[in-house]
Length: 148
Length: 148
Image 1 (cartoon, rainbow over the protein chains, first blue to last red):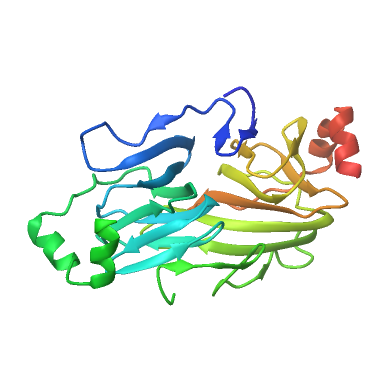
Image 2 (cartoon, each protein chain N blue to C red):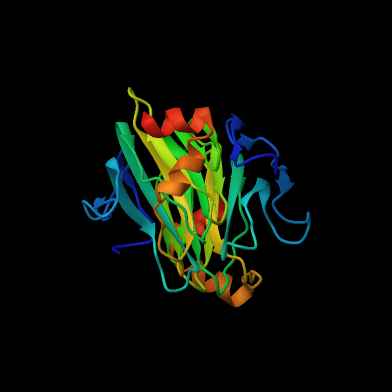
């Protein structure tokens, strides 16, 4: 790091912060998501990451033991949390509790950029099996969200 | 908490999140600063807070062992980090290293609102004594910032 301040250069991009793939291609289903690590430091027990989903894109439907503390920074979209779907807009807060299925989707005409705070020490995400998907799809709102 | 999503209602205010005093009045020097705790959870090793400094206001000049991971959310101002002063604007990132003197000031015509991530377990801030202030004031830029 060149100094204590890293300016945002254009929307959703910061000086000296690499634009990374969301996940390895093929490791899990997702579309048009990027990842940037804003703060990761041995002195901090959490990391702060910035994810941006391009218009029409979506993050992986997954769950894990660790929790997510999310704040939308840019654009708008929808988020599935458990058996409910919520609209989210700039600066809205989202808490993803432990072992709760979740997925983010950008609107068709807007990116969805958000901060996500997680514990540095955390478990790997789990993908839903056929049984879990069947249970989720019993909720019509969730079914249509997952199919979108 | 009523649900996993807490919308921002107006700039810098969220549903079901209390607007708190920055510190107890008289405990340390500051002017026109509010504090909101956005995420504080037993499952998270860090807290995410939102501070907002009114136009012309300033946070306490202090240091501590724990580090700050800061992201500006609203308005603009300046920040003192160690022996340097930086202008900051929306979405800029600021890292305050351990035991580094720091202070935030909003511009005269703008609030300065920022997120601050800290470890849940952390030490209390230290205020500068006469000797520390004298050392800081040897830097003309810092001297004028502190006097402002």
